[in-house]
Image (cartoon, rainbow, N blue to C red; front, side, top):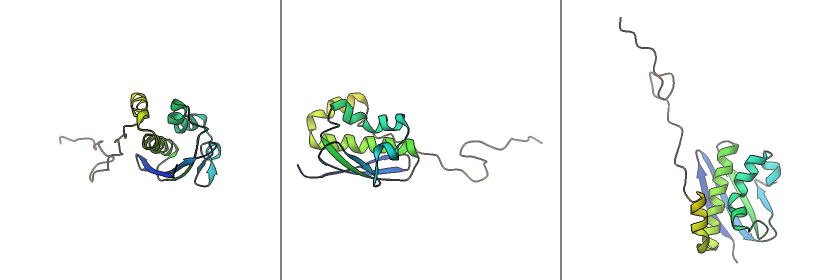
Length: 128
C-alpha cells in the first residue's frame, strides 16, 4: 500500500494527514497523539473512525494540524482520517456515513459588522 494523503477542515482548523501501513503510531506535528491532545475527549474524537472500523493498530498516521483550537483540530483530524479510510477501503463508507463522520461541518464564525458591538448584537435603540 502506498501513502494516502487527505485533508480535513473544521472551523479554521486544517488537518493534512499521511496514512501508511504500520503498527498504529499516530504523530501530530512531530508529537504523539496523547501528548498533542492531552484531554481524553479529544483523543476519543480523533480516534473515532479508526475505532469504529477496528483498524487502529493497522495504520501509521502522520498529521500536520494548523489553525483553530484543540476541538476544531481534533474534528478536522477525524474528517481527514475518515476520508483516508474511505480511499483505502471504499466499502467502509456506509459505516462511516451512518456514524456521521463523512459530512464536513460547514459552520464558521460570522464576521463582526461595522457599527455593531458583535456579529449580530446591536447597540440599544433610542427613539428620542
